[in-house]
Amino acid sequence: SQDPKQSVINVSKITSWVEDNGFHDWIVADNFNGSYPNELPVGVVFTEGILWGGLVYDGQDQKVRVNGNNYGTGCEPNTRLFRVRTDYYKTDLTLDAASFFNKDKNDVTEDDIEIIRHQYEKDWDEWPADKGAPYYDIDEDGKYVPDVDVPGVPGALQTLWINYNDNLSESMYGSLPIGLEIQETYWAYTSEDPIGNVIYKKVDIIYKGTEASLSNSKIDSMYICQYSDLELGLFSDNFIGCDTILNLGYVYNSKDPDDEYIKFNLAPPAAGYSYLQG
Image (cartoon, helix red, strand yellow):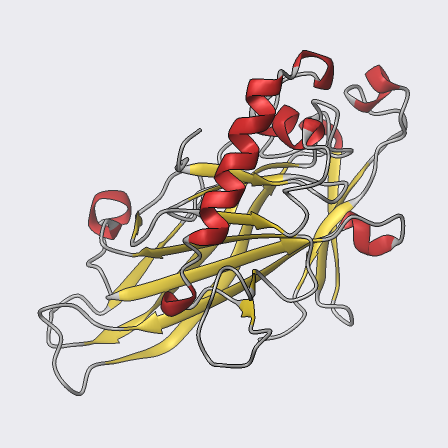
């Protein structure tokens, strides 16, 4: 729990676990990456991550190279994981601690809450703005000052930030590393409006090359995708669809009730991913 390798974005009604290398583990009830609604051990995603591939011209023989995160990872962290919450010092963190420690909220202790609060404070003080993590520069002096500025996406209640590379691609995919730095920013809001059902994600990919790269190295015909193994409650009755106008891919249940959601007297939800920009 001190500087954890993985943590959870959990202030909206849907939660998601994120590792410092971009991998999304199945933490909740041994079958879900997160939960929806976020107090229940049932969810809509098994695992997810960013995948990429392209033709790399850097002087090495292997041209087609791929990497990313699905059921495993070919990546390693450049920095530790950081997570901030703008109201951490004054709000009740019981639900926050419950999802992080995978406990019922009634079993959360004061020690659990203080661990979460202390990590929020540490991440606030050590926020890596100099490495690219977003923040609200209140005094507009161009540098992050913990006692003045606000870390995270401006206006968001909670922000999680990771920074990793593709150095382990050969062990995972048999592909030489391209030499990428990947920064992922997750943020969310607490709201009864539809925005309360959303986790936002921004991905920045920087081509830095490897020690073997030439000065004129380049990547051609590169494809990037948001991969997800969607498991909505009971996975065997899921249907998927897409809306090309909304850039939306989604999962929904083929019948009602769903065998997992009915345990909580809930109709199955629908969930998906929408590309907002890129």
